[in-house]
Amino acid sequence: MFNYFDDLAGRQLTGATLTREEAHAILESTDDQLLEVAAAAARLRRAHFSNTVKVNYLVNLKSGLCPEDCTYCSQRLGSAAQILKYTWLKPEDAVAQATTGIRAGASRVCMVASGKGPSDRDVDRVAGMVSELKDQHPDVEVCACLGILKEGQAGRLKAAGVDAYNHNLNTSEEMYADICSTHEFSDRVRTVEQAKDAGLSPCSGVIVGMGESHDQLIDAVFALRELGSDSIPVNFLMPFDGTPLEGTWLLTPAACLRVLALVRFACPATELRMAGGREMHLRTLQPLALHVANSLFLGDYLTSEGQEATADLDMIADNGFVVLGSNQDQETDDGAPSPEGSLTIRRRGAGTSMAPNA
Ligand code: SF4
Figure 1: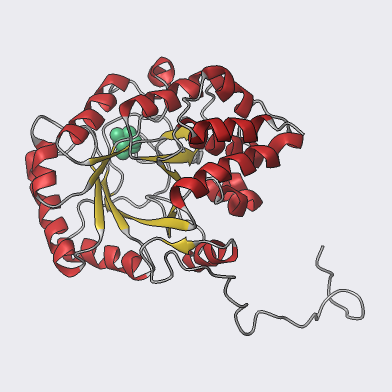
Figure 2: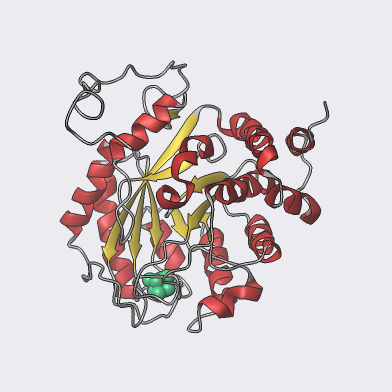
């Protein structure tokens, strides 16, 4: 029987470019078609990334106190979100945090600082941290995320050993003024281009669930395709209390899966990361989403906690994947046996005086 999405995946594998009409078909697929969409996207994921999952680890070098007003951000100007606020971590503390993530399996460390963009002194500070980290962990990839760059700063980061630069487009050009008034979409595009021109691997993604239309979301994804982003983090809005988007709950797990599939179809060979908010929005579809995305953040996000790192590592193994760069990389694995002690004898419900589990 003809399967539209499988046929589409076949065409992507021979180098076709996803059209706007096809993008709409993915986003507007029915729940009955959800597994077909996921399976077709999984074909592309397997073809380009085999059974590997790239594990990334965030270190928030400087938290809160930002003068910009991005509506989705808990670190924005005037945010009443009760987040941790601190100025630059000491280099040894930043390296210690990163080392924890590397030991847990991360092959990329993302060093992030709040703010519109770095001063030259900030660039020097981060350069020092990166060289210290690379001395101890020469194989780790470092991605810096420091905001809008000024002329020459990308080259200085590259010279210091930084491998990649993250700056998300977040949404479409048309919608950008609705989510931020202190800088423009074009500033973001320019920074990604500067990073790319300096030889840094460009990482740029989106935040979905901010009220964007399907056309605006497709515009954003196609802009990332045009920009040549090497990795695309897809964030799902975490509507922090105390921010303008507080109480904005517009996503369902199935809608989130369709967005990941859209990005996979649009950019089949690009690293696709299920990023912030995956736990609360994909919920029980996270393992299925891992068959579409090939990358995730392990551990906590910048200002909120993620699910337990061990749960993520179990999810990767249980779904037949291996952590990229681990010694299992490329080996087949039938999944790890259940850990000892995971069976709990029932002591509640029928036959007891305790409330049942329902
Ligand atoms: S997204 Fe970045 S620039 Fe915008 S408010 Fe948050 S920390 Fe500041």
